[in-house]
Length: 349
Image 1 (cartoon, rainbow, N blue to C red):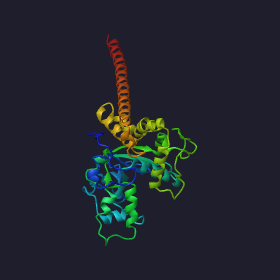
Image 2 (cartoon, helix red, strand yellow):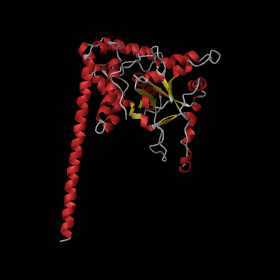
Image 3 (cartoon, rainbow, N blue to C red):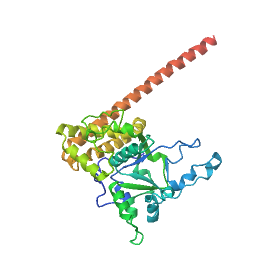
Image 4 (cartoon, one colour):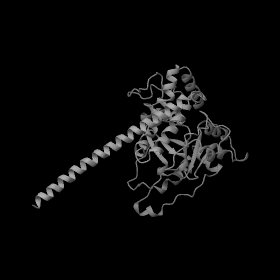
């Protein structure tokens, strides 16, 4: 498993894109994709070789019996066409879309997950964290694909789709997302409890279990509040925080949220691939630390230094913990084996 290069900072603003919209160029500096979804019950025939996400057009490939397993074939690597994007964006034809929606933006994922949690019947909303570099040529930004259209192809919905795709930093994945590309999938409620204070109404990082959305700093109930305004509001809240709170939110707060996103992956990898685990956590934490106000973290070099030190200390502590547990388990097994050997010897004397 290759690790992201934390020396390269995110090239994306809070909302929308800069001058670059090509996925293959952006992925060099933006290593994670986020997908908001409600998990479905897994088929009893699922195994670890099956994709984690499958586009609606190919859903029938998983509605199968064991007899059909050898015949499953997914489309070759592709990113699709403008017609495919239009099919995906139009709610009347989305059920036959060849795409899976994701976003470069962790904050968009939080915003969208909270919206779905509030308006939806099902409350088991999760955010999947995807390794953007592991999609094997299947991904493109929606803006990138929309730009390929000719003026004649564009209908009255085009600019609405374009603005949405731009603001949300939408990335469309063609066909499927392979299981190894999904680093973790975390329930929204676990994320809410780990958000930096500028996302919360009060300067605390505690969420009320009675209504986990109550502490959100934005008016998630308002249909008029769009994501762009949300970003501006969060920046204003951060700017009005005392300097010590700003430092806390961009250091320990960023590491805390990054670890909430990557916890299962980090714990799984830290012992055998220590540097890889640290690199993923450090890269995401630095990206989060830079989010609340453009340029602020760069103007405070101590932010990056503290983040890197915290990630290293956390990784070393976990590695030692797991190594100690292994040593204890080996010692316990040795005692058991010695006891069995003594019992066998006693039976043969």
